[in-house]
Length: 92
Length: 230
Image (cartoon, rainbow over all chains, first blue to last red; front, side):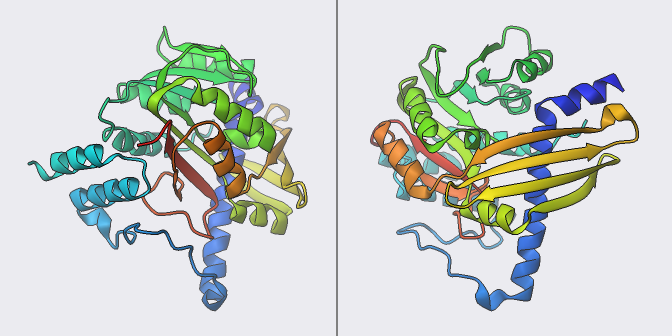
């Protein structure tokens, strides 16, 4: 089929290949973690960064606040931007 | 055709980041835009996107996908001639890993000159775990959309590069093809030095467009930084 051939010859396939290998990699990594959790190396520590949200997906406002705090603590957001964005989430 | 559904999710994540910008983000430069999937997702959220890519074939597909009037240009990085300034630049799906570390540094520098002060640069690149995956998985096989594919990885650990060959076998000759790609894996200091030399402030590094900080198991990391100091 001409369309498929065209799709295959261009970037879509390159992206797909990466995505597929990425997904396979993730599965493999999970499998590896299950099998040998004691071999996992400790995660790097990030100064002042808030802990990753545990079940943060349940409360979008909380997840958003944690994201903003993370951006602020790493210096991506200025004090003013952080304050303004936080106030918007909290509705104040 | 197989399209990963990630683009909409990633665009929403970028939108969340940029909503905190006190100046607002409207114009976005999409580096290595490919067939325009990310640009489309951003345009749907109201952004004005300029796409650049090294492949005319991909740009032709992007031209069909994106609204008329969208600026698309063939640019072979690190040569960048599109005019700025942009509020933000993005590069997704490890497009920048096709550059050598030196080309990456030149690209970041060229992008920095096209961003307004405090403009954003957000991109994903392979992390060390992906290099290790490729090294430890010289052959990956699977099925996608009814076609069998085989991916062969040939990693040069010293050069931190990988030649990936994909062979796809379909039901017809037209569905059967091969492609070969060479990608480079940057060290974190490579990336940090390049950003710093290009005038970017500190970066937040996360696990592929999520709020989770990058860890040792991160396969692709997302770098979020802005031009100039806060």
